[in-house]
Image 1: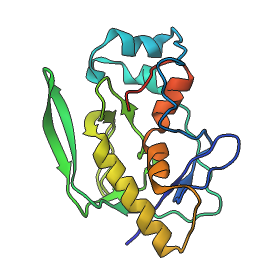
Image 2: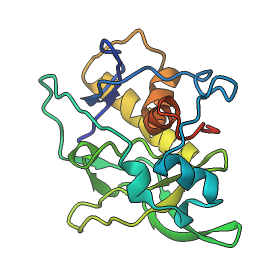
Image 3: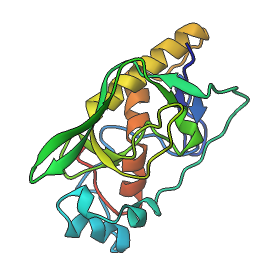
Image 4: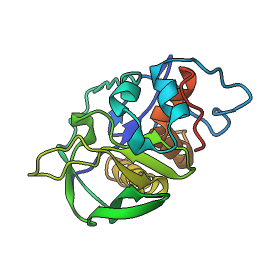
Length: 202
């Protein structure tokens, strides 16, 4: 079974049991402080302030402010990953989420490093709910459509991948698993926060 892991850093690499490496900052649970948040009035921030729901926003405008960087660091990454859980994506009807489709446990998806960083996603205006382009199933065409997804599901996937990869490759790290998972799933949150666009509830 082929799998991978993530590694995040800013001004120096933070070793996180990983399949790929990012060169950005550490994220921690106290980082998204409303008190210290410095709002920047720009097109992306106005998308968040002027709309109640993500599907009303222009995601091209918001995503243009997110910078992705991956450093291979000598790793031979697998091209596919097997989902460890059922992963459900949702659309919105009024103020309720409606199931759109589910990627079943065991489904093979393309390595997210092939198309940005798919362990991260956009924070919404509701805690625990994210907005993202779904993983691409092996053999299928990728979509550019966004859907809602639960953060807890993304965290469970990252946790599984981290544990499995470190075990199979006999890797060790000083970074707690919970911190690695938090950093991986909130990369976009940090970028939005640091640029004054949005203070994530997650």
